[in-house]
Image (tube, rainbow, N blue to C red; front, side, top):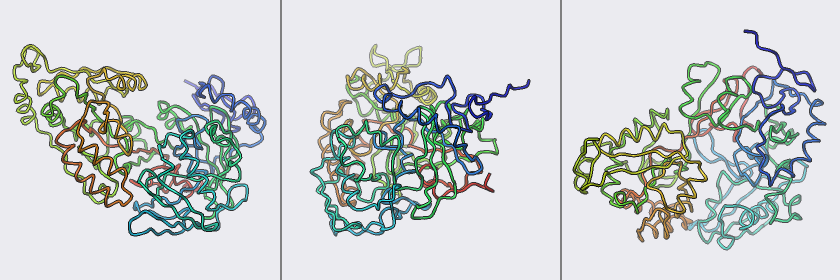
Length: 544
């Protein structure tokens, strides 16, 4: 059957089926779903007229253009989203090289006091904002004070826990009173131009138009924007490391559900949003390369969160039995995770992970699981194969916003030892509301356990009914630690307690997966999997 050729009504360029925008001029294709939150819609309408005016006058040279699919709204390049695409426009102090070691970007060098409380950071003197103004230590101070405001973002950084002293344009000291700021050399925080933002109302930072058309200091500069559809960026000719090889980057805003379709149809060159099980559909396609990376530390592992108020799940022997009944390696293979993905039962730091110091997990042991369940009183087995204690069946409901594949596998593995797990698919926000109200048996979701999010589950006032003062104390100590050795000691002491209590069962680790066209070169596993984070170090094979 001959496919009808669709052309742009403005510039005449051919448009691929299901494409959201014209590859020639960037103008949105009619019917594209409106994904802009209502609160931000008005802030983007004014840009639509400008984008349309520029549309057919700036055809994209695809021979040196990379198109990346990203699931976000219009604020993807700046503070309200604070997501990976920001690295196209803004520089962090440091980044990780292909070996996972820190190397400078905005920071030239650094040193710290023996107790890690005082850091002195030396910035590069040859970095400029895209408007030509030099980047200085005043920009760093301005940014850190901005993001520590309670009315600006969800970071939870207490401004009373740190202070910044500017020594000169390229040098500042950072004094830490507690560990809430994280490492002063983190590779996530980027910095913003004080001279452009200092007169704006920080209480309205989430509404600043600056985030839609930012002026950064990174490898790419903002060119234009088609609301709800795309951003176009160009290589910065004044970038301190030299103009990037890839001339243009198109950031296509689309849902992650459409990622595989967009890849296979040739509409995008890469995405970080392909579902692990969908990787099987591109495994035999010679056009693509798959890159796996693990988040440092814990990230958001797939987790079974137990409601300890449940009449069966409050017993640690039952929670241990359920964990032993799971064949987590088999589950990870079924989810198409890389074979090197770690299995763990406890919290740990990124240094412990990198050094191989994470305690070994509980094994898959069905016999021991059955013994523990019997010891806990779940002995009688009915005609349905479900264990009972008296007339009460060993049964619970797990709510999950995920596809049912993981839940179905877990359900089958627990059934082998006489446990019935029913699955309740829920919208993510509904699930969170239910968790706060506490009417659930168990949750299965990608649980954020790094930093302060862990207190919600393991600290005082635990939302899952977990009470262990020693755990709360050690968790607070790890979070407050400025010296990384102190944090590691707290995590080491915390590990055997968590492995004994098992208030949650970590099912699978966070795995960052990128699928990219093979013409995009320079990516590698596990530390260089994100093209958005390292675009200035990538190139196109043969310029195609």
